Length: 291
Image (cartoon, rainbow, N blue to C red; front, side, top):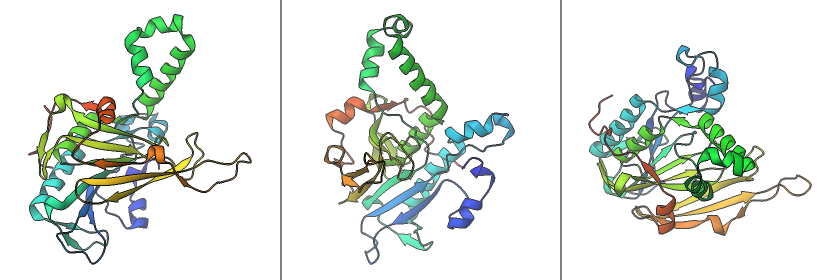
């Protein structure tokens, strides 16, 4: 919603907090405080459409691009620190929920993508040939690369690297987002595969999942993920997809085994390491920042 940050209508309709980011806890009803608890850190990554700092093109920009600022990153770290110290957050029902910090999974939710899909062939091509040379040797490929690069630049999350660094400092393990309508996942590591100590212990990697669209027309089809958390280190992800029939009619959702998998939060597979996004060195991390 362009201009969402200028209004609290969304929050009033859905009964959500008006300040972002905020944190909410979840676990099935009837389980003890020591049971596995999800901590959900929620962001509004929309641009404040209409703000003078964005100029006359703010509306078009706000339709595609998002932003997470330093103050929001600092607040994420502070929220994580307070949750770990207090061992208590508000649940989805608005009531206090106590939990055991060592038995949690920390998840960030936002709309815009902080990390793009890994394109192995494109990376290899760019390494083998200079970009200007490809305009003569492979003009069609060069145009496609230029279009993809321009499209990515127009849709990227402003402040993405700082946001990712903040996620490491806040002990985040999963980032769930959409925006691109393209079902991909990608691991994120710090330079040198260094671990970062946060409120819930050391974090050496996190995983980012881009969700497909559920309603809009997309070349990737409509789909969704189903996450099943077995314990605080093991979870499965099942991917369901629906493509329209030849008559362009909706079809049932089917589980796609090739895109489903089982993971350990503390470990990355060789394939994930190969395609992982490397965040900048942790020189600007703000573990002790105050909002």
